[in-house]
Image (cartoon, rainbow, N blue to C red; front, side):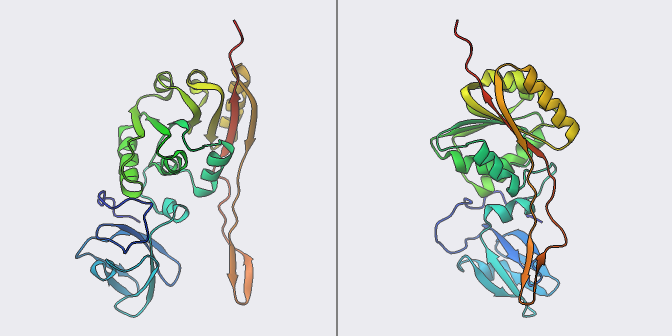
Length: 276
């Protein structure tokens, strides 16, 4: 639900300024439906209840309540991360906000960290990592598909802005990792085991490995791979389930649908090499 052509919008993290031309905003209609749209001059946004003109939104404050041509209410916000990611255009699976928190907290992604991620997809996790490491950190994204690299670059340009501390590498995970040195390594791969040795090569002693796999078969293979790699220890695995609630005046209950299983999150520590 996005205007993928709007690659020149301002930075995602913005000051308290009016909405600008070409900026990407989140529109929420009266039924709670969300639309990620770019405020291109002259553009019209159509809804089931009338339309809005982008020109009427440019220059208004973040958090504006607008009215369509038919009088229906539409809320206009700069998208926060948790509402941005589910609306991103993508040709690959994203790491959802509920899971991103696990990477940042259990992976201990800190300001100034050197992070390498493999399997970049549309760049959803990349955004969170860049915000977490800050300008003093560095991020390398290794991806073997050129179209996924292009998607990630577009996402970062739209919602983060200039990122001189971010570099993309078009390569297989194992080959790319052997050229890097990192405090944290993220393997977002369907088959991470072939990259474990290279991840151990890249990580400093005490560094943290984070792996994300969707199925129990892949999780079992990952567990066996970590046990076979003597440089990793203290592995932990968990999954996160998220259940939203419907909270109205006379109805407080769980939503009919929930964000259940998306994947298994595993961390392991890199041991120091034995003394010579």
